[in-house]
Image (cartoon, rainbow over all chains, first blue to last red; front, side, top):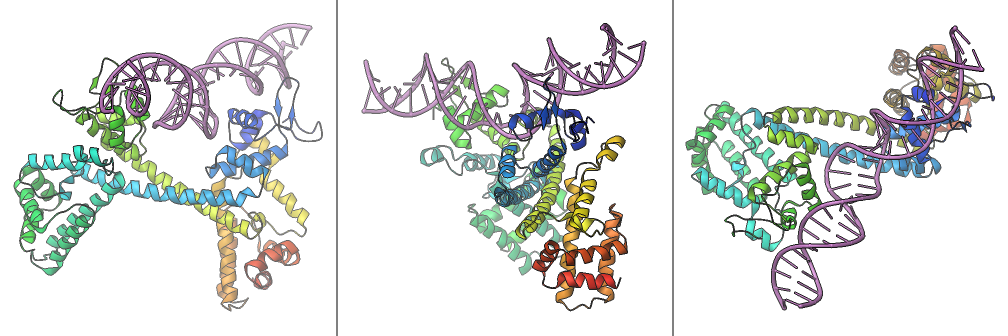
Length: 252
Length: 252
DNA sequence: ACTTGACTCTCCCCTTAGAGGATACCTTAA
DNA sequence: TTAAGGTATCCTCTAAGGGGAGAGTCAAGT
């Protein structure tokens, strides 16, 4: 510490940096930005800071913790009337981020869930019933790309937006969970409860742009039962599920 | 669309960009990174992409939505075994971010709360009882900076860490809210309920490194009542609160 | 007074994921 | 053939510093 000479404490860059748990580089940077000026500069160009600067630095760091850009911090400290406004703005930003991360987390969990079970999100649940893997692929291609058609109309809804896919996949997952639970709980295949659940699922899909008729769905469950990959996927979630789905569908 | 000539669809940069809702710049960038190579490059240097590239791009964008850096996406797509690991890592990251933003939001709300009431977070609640504003200031300086002392020992606990301050301030705020509620609900100043609440507050402070004896606290409430600034602060939150605090403290 | 080691200075390049712009070349329909 | 619009490369810029080079400075011990 170099203090008490000129009547006040003065700190070198390293000292101040240590006190505030930042690096010397940071102090250089703040100096260049005009955000924190040294109280004194020696002839050799050395920066020295007083206690006022320490306080100011702490205030800066407080705002920085709140992810406020340095440029804004500067404005905010020069003109205190910006304070409230900036903080309110930042609050909105946090709320958005919270929302976003919560959603992404859902997507991620879902994806991981499927990964652990051996396959990527199975989009087949979202489409009409076809009989062969090839038909499925074709349908997926079409849905996924809408190629010529989309191309000549408007380049919209083209990409599978994560957000949308998210919702659909979550619903699909919930649906399978629900059905598995019904099976475990001994709900009979023609029980109105389970019939209603399937109906809800179809309604949801239709409401979200995936036209899927009762007949399509029946066809779909049959395909799932017959196709090794899909049957295994379902059965690995709950033994008997593939068979249960068919039986329930037949009674729609 | 330039397709069907060589037997497969091919898209120009702009077309692909539109299809995937990205910019041409992005495609350039991905090309340079080796993340998404064109399926064909004309003599003039024009990039053309096929349907495989469109799919790959969509996969890239999916990961990008999850905030995974492009370099990692590349590795992840080259070697699928990284997938799970990367996603798990990203999940952890999201959880941390969620936690962080939730905490910062609390700090922010608190800060705004105080701002609206006219003053910055009042740290006086955290310290011993003094009689004059100057004594308070001195104490604050000391606590805030620990100057010489801290300096010669270890540069630690120096900065007012947002996190810690956060907890204390939240507790202080809760405490005042609770007391105000008790007052509104007609809880008598010597009711064990309210006495217990004060005791909890003191215990909390002591547990968090702010030694504050029963006598200190009594002294503090008296100061708050006598000092215009603090009395107004309390009374603006709840009429009668400053008086109630004194009465409750006297019966500790 | 001199040396040594720690400290400090300025300057420059690097990081992410592209955006923006300059300038030159290419393609396609009228 | 010409004009319009696509495309290419190259350069600079962003936020908040990190890393390092090369040179000068400070305080202490000899």
